[in-house]
Length: 119
Length: 271
Image (cartoon, rainbow over all chains, first blue to last red):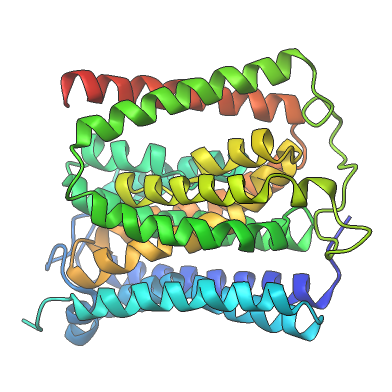
């Protein structure tokens, strides 16, 4: 049994592509970090706001990119799911999905708003 | 053995385990990172939430395509879990941790006993062969599975509790969601596991963003764990289709018992 409907294909495709992109970025960043001398220790900066890590550049910025891709994937999945329900004429389901998407987007905005100022 | 390899293997184990049972793996990841690698609890919880997203996306990519996950039911319940995750994050600063642990311990024990009774009665949904007799991917209408419309208000309320669990403990909430779908709605075990895998990433993301932007996660240390989790989740999702549903349920009951014990210890001794 497989879900061959457009909804199932879209969701599965988004998940597969997004996970692959995130894992690839994390893998490339990890290799670059190890080759640059960080062999299994915590990063030079330790735990830092993700914005600071991206701004600093280098291998850790690639790692941060992978992590942000992964963290953003649920938002992408919800958007695709809402579109799939709308396309299938399931308006109540599409609306519910958009509500969940809005809640998650609000969490993201709150997280960004509460981030400490750039160091 | 180098740290990165150990971290990746820990993630792999958590990913297989989590995808197999509809959990995010946070139940393993948090203690491994705090006790095994010396991370602070805050950093471990933040890393765990990102790992839960990896477990969810890695497993759901397979489960949704295979038609095992009920996306429609998952979206309905996710409305409750996301609100719960946000409120859980707020409540974490207000409710005493030992009280939370105590309530959770009792809840897990009760759930374990109820699932054991169901297994002992050889409920048809659990004691079945590897093939599903329902169509979880079917749209609403005459062909939709019957469990999808059973006790929906109670299920959404319970999913709100699952979301709070996620926000308070840094897990995906699957430990509540899977029994909720099984016991409250009567969904087959394999559907409950696959649907939970789809949901928990969305739930975990609601809590993860604050940790990510606040600076509670060490990206260099988290990277090998996440890679391991993503690979493990794909393996676990493939395995779950081959494991007899009764064994899945028994393994889940064992996890519930372990969690109930750990939370009970935390409630009594405050560690």
